[in-house]
Structure formats: structure tokens, C-alpha cells
Amino acid sequence: MAPRLVSNPQQSQVLKAIGLMVLATLCIAALDATAKYLTDTHGVPVAQVVWLRFLWHVVFSAIFLWPFALRPSLRSEKPWIQFIRSCLMILTTALNFVALKYLQLDQNIAIFFLMPLLVAALSGPLLGEWVGWHRALAIFAGFIGVLVVMHPGIGDVHWAMLFTLGATLGYALFTIATRYLAAYDPPAVTQTYTPLVGVLVMTPFGLMQWESPDQCWVWLLFASLGFWGGLGHWIIILAHRLAPAGILAPYIYLGLIWMSAFGFLVFGDVPTWWTMAGAAIVILAGLYLLARERLAEARERKRTRTHAAGSEFDPPQ
Image 1 (tube, rainbow, N blue to C red):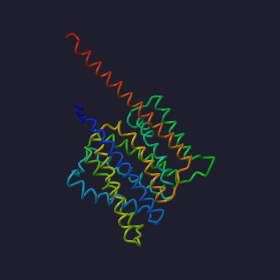
Image 2 (cartoon, one colour):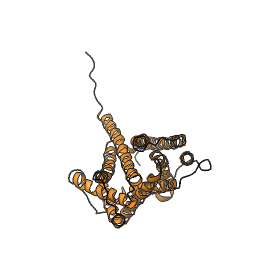
Image 3 (tube, one colour):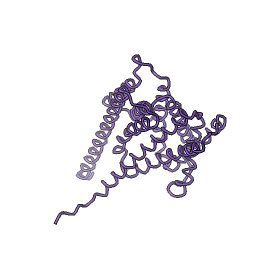
Image 4 (cartoon, rainbow, N blue to C red):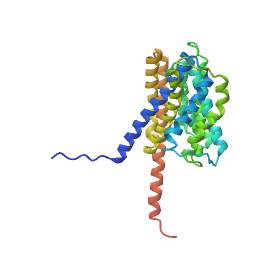
């Protein structure tokens, strides 16, 4: 009789989490592709697209998340930090959508992959989590990779790449603010603030630049902005409930595949060798940084276990 295979529940959860991360990166790629299509192909003002992205995010949350999966709450111990964090997301979204109007999707995401390295670099002065020289070298290598994507001095550097760098820095600060707030507020509070503040801040700008579309199906694209954004961020939350961040982090780089596919299928863009080479450097630097963080965590766990085991044999004082 063949032996019966017994599934590992923990391994099953990890596989589900990885699957959710793959789906989340696809949602974020669809969001960026839709934003580029609206601003570039249809000429919709960026402020209008940013506003609709947050407006429909609130609608999506009110229909699908708040009644069933996420109880909304604005009761925060750090409301001003929540507001600043939400404004960082607005700034990141606006800069990103401006850049997407002029850059290829794969170019934009290749530069955006610098974000985890910026988080590591900024965690020292902002959170007191300083990096060693190994991680500092990884951060430096990531910047070299971005320079390869931009290749200044060899070709024309499009000014929109600076907007992508600004968006990357904004999202890094947004991530650090999220880590800081995790010690004070539950995730439901943080997830409630982001779209609501986005609507509150962007409504005047969106209405001032409003242009009604000629085709009815463009309204569906407007609604899809909130769907892709809201669903993508919610799936990321679900994935991190099932598996540690260290296991899921490498899968964000799948975004390059989805962005390249959308860029080719929708806009006919083919990734350049500069983009691929630079993205490879940034991804390898990010994976090396992740490996160093895992090694540091493993050493800390071993040190804790050794200290605990030693204390069991300490003679009573």
C-alpha cells in the first residue's frame, strides 16, 4: 500500500500567501496600466485620475470590505501621523501617475523597486534601525541599478523619471510610517484613513480639472481604479496574515513581469536592455538585503534560545 501523504497546514498557508501576493502584484500592475491608459491615451487629467482612484477605493471598501471583512474605524492614537501617512500615499500616487503618462510601465517599476532599499536606508535616522556595511553596499548597488535604468550621460534622461524617484521616496516614507503606526493602531484604522483622506484632499483638485469622458466604457475604467487599488492592498493584508513578510517580500518583483506584459499588450512597449539590466541589479540588491535581514533574525532567535536555555540551569540566588 502506498504511503498516505499528510499535508502540512503551515506549508499550505505559506503557499496560499504566495498565491495571494502573486495576485496582489497583478492587481497593482493593472492599476498602473489603467492609470497610464487614461492619462496617456485618453488625456484624462492626472488630478482627476488620482481623485477617482481614492473615491472608488472608498466605494469598493464600503461595498465589499467594511460590511464583511474590515470594520472601519478612525479612532487612532496618532491621528496626525495617520493623516501624514495618508498624504504620503496621495503624493506617491500623484507622482507615479504623472510619470506613467510619459514612461513605459517597465521603466517605472524598475525604478520603483528601489523602495525596499530606501526603507532600509531611512529606517536608521527615522526609526533608529541602522544598517551594517553589508546592507549599505546593497543599498548602494540598488542606486547603481537605477542609474543604469536612467543611463544619464549616455542617452536622454526623461524628466518623468525624477517623478518616479519622488514617488519611490514617498512610498518608502509611507512604509516607515506604517511600521511606526503598527505599534499604536490596528490595521483596520490604518486602512480606513488612507482612502478617506485621499478623497478629502483630492476632491477639490479632481473637480477643478474634471473632464467627462465621451465613451461610456471609460466610466468602467474610472471605477476599476478603486477596484484594483482596494483589492490589491486588501490581498496584501490577507497574505501577510498567513505568512511572514520575509517570505513574501521577493514576490513583489513579479511586478516587472506583469508591467512588461501590460506594456507590450496595451501600449506596444518593449523593455529595453537598459531597463532589464538595471532592474536585475536592483532586484538582486533587494534580495541580498532581504537575505541579510533573515540572517540577522535567525541569529537573534538563536541568541534568545541560548539565553533562555542557559537561564534554566542558573543556580538560585
